[in-house]
Length: 234
Image (tube, rainbow, N blue to C red; front, side, top):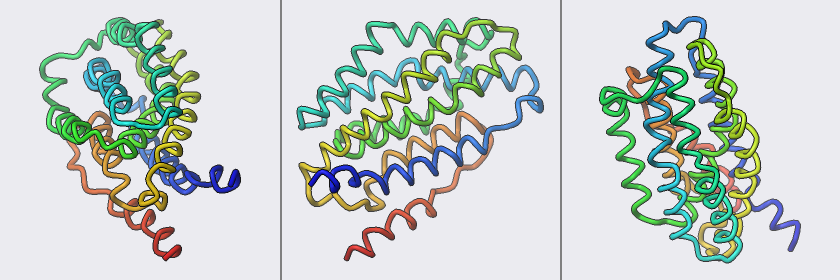
């Protein structure tokens, strides 16, 4: 039984790691960005995170049913609120002269709204998986974000230093929460494309933050590879 539990989310984590790796690989070379492009990328990131991360994690807490998942997510939320993580991000953006403008918010509005609509369904497994993906991406994105801020003349590092460390722990915790929720629902123990709905909409939003002028295409490859384990099991 213990071996089964340890391996339950392994194929899912592999797909999430691959998706995060693809996003990181797509980041533009900071040396090729002009100051306004650096500013805008930081600002779009702040426009998405500052007012939505705690909201989405709260939705995950409302959606889950297992005691383990509730405790893990509550600990995450408690840290976000107690240590004022939105304030950290705002200070980081201000120090880099990258406070979000109306134009920055408008650039991500449509894809941000798509994530909000998804979260509104309160689908426990899908939301927890989306947030595990988000935490994992943030951890790996922090060195790049810090580099952009440094090139903007900022020495403010609290936000990137903290989230480069704590979000590793948060990601691991959310995968444990995911496993606890999956064990409650035998019909979702095998990974299927629909399980990744939240990951897809959030990935599209992150791509919008990184490349605001690029037309984003659906992530068919991710769906196809996720379907393989389920097909083999059948």
